[in-house]
Each structure stands twice: as structure tokens, then as C-alpha cells.
Image (cartoon, rainbow, N blue to C red; front, side, top):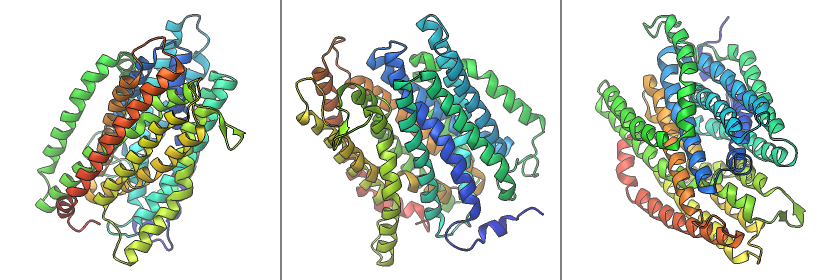
Length: 500
């Protein structure tokens, strides 16, 4: 007998058991994703011989498409596939992409052919992530009643799973790639993604009606062939994505179009809802707009900071040797795992004393911490030696600070999208949240490219000064954003109505 939605949502204790199934599926998927992400710029510069500014732009374009397709994946899940089939199909595409990278790269005799396999594998991964990522987050939200106060705690635990995967994948993949084999590192990503998919397949029967296809459950009047058309269409679009990712000028046009079209679609859908629901959706848009700015700064981690780590960092922390790129890719996740529960307890403690800052204030604090972190990245220039290499300890301290900025924004953002969105629009709004990340990634690539020294043969010291000048500018922008956000918090709080 199938578990009912009421039985799932009327769970006892802090977490529903289904959350743990989604936790492990997402953990291994994030291992794959962050492992791949942490290798991109280093691989492009060292193996495909790209210039650093080009690699930054390419990184931004690739990540922008990854997150842009989460909106499309959320839309197709809402209307046609349902969350479960979307997850399965997305996982298969991600495994295929990782296998292409594992077996295709290095076999070619020219950089051009290696580039072909690289962008083909990335394109499969982009489309696959679009179907996987937003829909598993939406399933987490569906485990709770609309006003269940335990929802934030559930998303915080889920966010810890994301970061365990990011910690393991972020350090392991790039370290294996640099010291052993790029093919082996990409192959490892394929293996863990397979584990994620198997975990989901064997636990989805415990989800009751959550995530079923709207066509099969009678919630949509669509035809069964719509599903097959979605599968075929997602395969047919891969060559197009491949061309658009490889040529960043096409990415520019895509980003100019997808955002306005998404807003037009949302405003069209908003006509169906009452004034209170419309205000909540407008509040959600405020969070989305400011999240673009946050991720534009934060996501230097995969672009300029990755290259900075590769070129300008020593490899010791307290006398122990570490791969600087591994530290860049994984230290933030380690700090999130350690401090996310503690910050959650702080919010609970403040809430009992009626002193907990509201969600919009937390977003503003996220920017303030982000600014402090980038001032610390800037300060690494004062600890550099004559060889242009600087302290890995100070660099890691900056990630310690940036972690609190992320914890003030990202897990709360996932939760607030489900709180502010009417049920029929939750997949779309979660997709828009990740689409905002796409724009953040896109802008991050542009900002990172602008930090590269104009001198092609720049010394390590010149690269150090150029990148740290850029980090100082980002710190200033982050402070301004945080102050503005805190200033408008009363207005946004009114739009949110009864949502806390």
C-alpha cells in the first residue's frame, strides 16, 4: 500500500525519514557536480591552453547554462515529467556526460579534438543538471505542511548533504586530476553520480505521491507522448548547447533573452492568483534579484579564485601540505558542515527571545560577511613573498568568513522559495531561484575575466596584484548591496505577509 502524503507530512520528530533518502541522492550528485566544477578552469588553462581571461569567461558561460537549465527542468517537471522522472533522466544525462569526459579526453591528438570532447561532455552534464537539481529541492519542500516550522531545519540538513558532497568531490577530483589523471577524475564523477541515481531509484517508492508525473496522476491533461518528446528534445538540444557554451558570445545573447522571457512567463502566471499571493511572488523576486549579485561575487571560487589558488598560493597550513585548488574547492563546504548546525541553533535561540532577524535582514548580513571575506582575499597580497606566492592560511580564513555569508542566504533561499510560491508554481519558482544563480555565474565569469592582468606574460606577482585589486572592488560592491537590502527590509517584510 502506497504511503499517503498526509502520512509523510505528519511525521514525528525533527525530520521525515524521506528527507534522508533525498539527502544521500543529492550528496552524491553534488560530489559529481562540484568535482567537475572544481576542475573546469584549471583544465581549460593547463590542458586546452586557454588564456586566463578566456577561461574565466568560459567558466561563467558553462555555469550559467547549468543553472539556466534548472529553470527549464523545473518547468518540464511541473507540466510533464514530474519530479521523479526528471531526476532519473537528469542523472542518466550527467552520467553520460562524465563518461564522455572520462573516455574522450586525452585520446585525441590535437587540442581542438580534446575541446570537442570537453564541450560535448559538458553539454550532457548541463542538460542533466537542469533536470536533476531544482526538482530534488522541490521534493524536500513537499515533505512538509505549508506552515510547518520544521521546514527550515529540513532544508538546513539537506544543505549539509550538498556540502558533504561538495567537500569530498571538490578536493578529491582536482587533486586526482593534477597528480594522477584527468580521465580518472572525470570517471570518478561518473561513478558517484551512478551511486546517486541508484540511491534514488531504490528509495523513491517511499515518497508516496510526491514527484509523480502530473500526466499520470491526472493533474495535467497532457498526453503520454509529451514525455517522450521531452526526452528527445533534451537530446536534440545538446549540439546547440555545445556550440553556445563553446562560443561565449552566444551565451551573451542567451542570457539577454532567457531572463526577460522568464519574467514575462511569471507575470502571465501571476494573473491567476489573488493579491496576497501576488505580493508574496513579488517578495520572492526581490530575493532572486539580490541573489544574482551575491552569486556573482561568491562564485569567483570556481573561476578567478581557482586560478589564483593554482598560481599564487603556498601549499601549507600549519606545517601540513595541501593542494591549494583542493582547499579552494572544499574548505567552504567543510566550514558549512561544521557551522551550519551551530548557526541554526543560534537562530532558534534568538527566536525564543523574539530577537531573530527576519529573512531579508539575514540576506543583508550575508552580503556583509561576503564583503569581509573579499577584503581578506585582498589582504593576502600583504603576506606574499618575492615569488608572488602568498599564505594559504589567510586564503582559507577568507573562506571561513564567506561561509557565514552563504549560511545567511543559500539554505534560507531554498526554503523561502517554497514558502512564497503557490503550489502549482513551486517548480518554476525554484527554477527561477537557480536561474538567478545562472546570471550570478555569468556575471562572475565577466568579473573574473576583468581581474586578469592585461599583460599576457605577467609574473606571478603581477597576477597577485591584479586579482587582489579585483577582490577589493568586489568587497565594496558587497557592502553597498548589504546596506541597501537591510534598508528595504520593512517593505519586503510587508510583501511577504504571514511568511516568516
